[in-house]
Length: 106
Image (cartoon, helix red, strand yellow):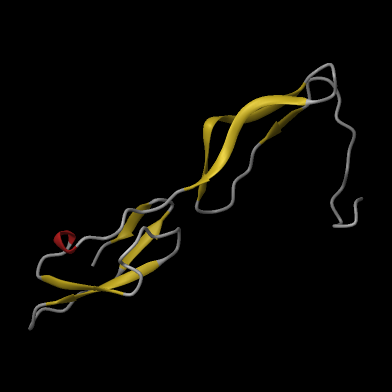
């Protein structure tokens, strides 16, 4: 066990490790599988890349007149922002970014 409390093991030939990404990130540029070679080092490809939602646009919501909050940029996973509509209409909900896609649009 190292100082962070993580169990350390000895890697042996043909051990397999799979890249794990935090929420809001995806494995890209490979499959994220790494295999231990005869020299004791891992080979494979893949890296974690953040998945962002494109910046919301007014034309995404009928009768929208203004974007509010952080809507002026790409949104990260679990971020949200809102919109203002022409009266008497009211926006229901927010733009919610979920794993690089909008899970909800007002």
